[in-house]
Image (cartoon, rainbow, N blue to C red):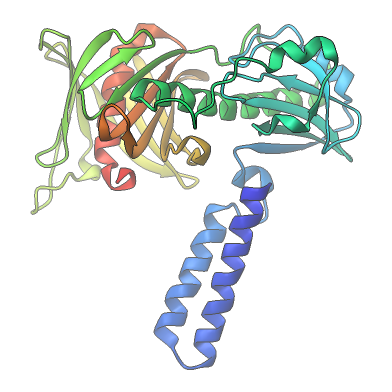
Length: 360
């Protein structure tokens, strides 16, 4: 909740400064500051904690930790299967997923009349039995490790995967609260990892194999994915530009695959989220934004869904200074279904290029 409290304090201080400006007759400055304060509270979800936090969720329920554990103990996740420990911030047992080599854990605990689902990296707060000590070895110390695009992308992937797991566990516990016979899936969010950085121009897998080549720019706009021989596999083309040559969203976009028209893409806002809808020959895909994952320095995140099924998560990082590649943008794809990998790649390139102002 530290991030939430800091955001609250920032909003309050901005509001106070705005009122002080009004009191001394600086109406324009006061108005600007009050608009800033309003924007801060709007983005944090006003009074709804679950809407403004992607790292921690609260569920009002009388479900007990043992009941939840019995349901999810065999479910596989990117952080492994659940186990039982204690957390210094809560009373009684907690359910723990993780830690990963980057110290990511998702912890489920009871907090008064609520269940708390939380992503943490401060492992000293986990009180474990001696037989579980083996879980807390072989961590990667990011401060002592050379930062490469690949290593950073793996780090960011686990942060994004942890955020997704927090949400999916919350959804299941809410479903279990409504129906005690509810069952979780056999696995949550098991992904294959791919990344792309602007210094090299290739999509690579976790073994650093070059899978796809990328061509993208904002002016004039281009978003293309090619095979490693340079043959175009997919592209997105805007239908209209304004007088300055900047893309106009309202006209939509054409999606091409192997040189043939494959679908139409439209952009909209739904409940404040940036949403793209891709109506393709393979079905309808919805690409929906979610809040920045600041712990991974990923500021442009989208979930790709087909119907109710999540197919992939994409994330873009601003220009990062790497030891090996210099300063460049670095993006990741968490793929849950590789059948559509080229589609994820061209959507990632298209959206990150379109949103370049958010990734400076």
